[in-house]
Image (cartoon, rainbow, N blue to C red):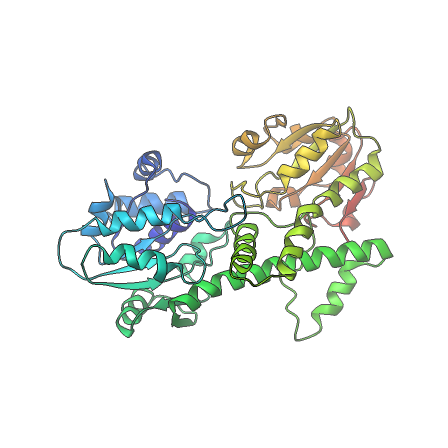
Length: 419
């Protein structure tokens, strides 16, 4: 029951489907059955508890129970990066094997891969495993487009649904499942649906990297990125969304999926040029905030620095690929004492960077600090004022790595931001 699986299951239950859920991790099963999601997502805890109480969602004791009790089975399995950047499908293979062994009746079920997998994986990896059971099945691929921090809303009201199917019958079944969706439903071949997910994440990652690169150039040349962005937005061919510069992208998808595409291209003899550059740009962008801080503070050795926002973005407790990790590490290597705060992700983050001290509040993190870096866009950070910075900090130096504060309201604060 990771973010994709649990949120998808709760959303289907809220749309009056009956959902059986199971995870290979018994602790996750236990927590979910008690109404305690194993991760933070706005609105999820309340919705999960309501669905459990109405019996529209239940946690199954094993995979066999899920398969026997279901007409449609979703595989929502993580596909992390291997050391070489390629996609690790070991957990997906294990889940498919469990499903293949999970039922002795002759009912034809629909098996849907919702994991992010490279084109060809569903048909070349999952299908042969399912065929070993000797039972008939429909096979589909339904990529997820959930944004952490608003994932439940995205699942309940998707702005688009992509269905990769092996037959018109599978398309009919899955379109019926998504009859509540008001956005467009695109039915494609399975391999195409797999590619659409990667294409989406690769393009969005490229937009972020481009915005960061452009902001860096604007800063170097003494040009306002805001004005340049405003001019870009007047061109009807350019969508200005996802072009807010900052410390770079993190999370469970962008970096992982771009790395997998690069590795797949190399493995099939297609050398990619743009996407490796996107990864390279993202791996150094966080240093802009550290550099801006050093310009204002000088030598960081012995300085107390507040790091605000430890999750990869606001609205989640997910610290995977969070840019706060390399920022904190860089500050500590420079001899600074780092005091971190995040409304949700503090304990998880401290497991990643145990040398960092964890504060219980924004005020505690800022108190006595010689500088602060904002790394995630939590709403409570946006409400901070220049007066608070001046009152709490030993030296009111603020580097806004997410462009969430208004520089016009930072009177008396040495304020810097990218671009």
